[in-house]
Image (cartoon, rainbow, N blue to C red; front, side, top):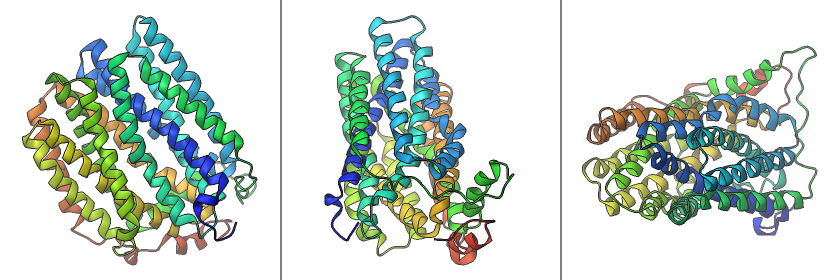
Length: 419
């Protein structure tokens, strides 16, 4: 591949458009799952459990997903994942339309499976994109990758909540269509470059040592170690705020489309953040970006603490999304720059295990917080928690200058190849 623009790379455009469309459908059902469970059970705790089921696979499957991404054809993995997701969401659509008994239990299992698909897709997609683009195209490709989430949040949440208001099964049908489109685009990709180099493991080494290599890379880079911890903890706070907004708007009598529009504003902010990210990250080190992101989130939570007005919530949630994307771009560029390529899947899986696993804990804890202390107390708890994280992040150095970088540490990894 030469130095031509990313828009001329057929394999990348197929890969990105398919996965982005699938992600739109997934975000549509992510808003439909808690709305449906809350409607069926009337319990915030049950809505929290469905969020937990969606994110529990992040705790269970991140490391296996990293191993698979580093040792198999990533496009083939993506195809299998999309086929599984398509099957599950079709079954859910039929179950919802038929109003089967114990529907919330069916949704719980389906949410877990869809969350599992999401874990394997997200880990394999990063490596697959790196495989189908040239080095010169990587900055543009990763910017497109980071734009996936805000686009999917904006369209998926808004459309998902709107069609849910028409018929409860419609978001799952839309999700099925998005899975099918992604399957078609993946099958059209013609490239052999998505098979990673074989892992150079000594004979007889247990598979867990491969996982340990990824853990060691993250642990020995002081910025990766600290930022992963802080991002995970902030994810718990943000997930609590999300459920707080959702239930607060529903309890206030606002229609489902209002909930989707407010939460979808994170996508508007994310798209703006993606547009600014390249300019900002070229001028501000990743270490400073993530610290400023924590303070920005703290400021944005202040109006949410004092107001339940949908317009105020929408503006603040828009800011939350924008700050998140800028931070993610900075961290992705940093990670790809310092993590050896043959360990990228396992290292990213290690970080995602903590960061995404924290989302599952946040979803579960949010349900009980809102059921117990209540909405007002939860507002103050999340604001205090985010302020504490922002203050702590600024207390010490988080740069790699205080420790060995991942690229330096690669020389110490047993029987691995430095690229």
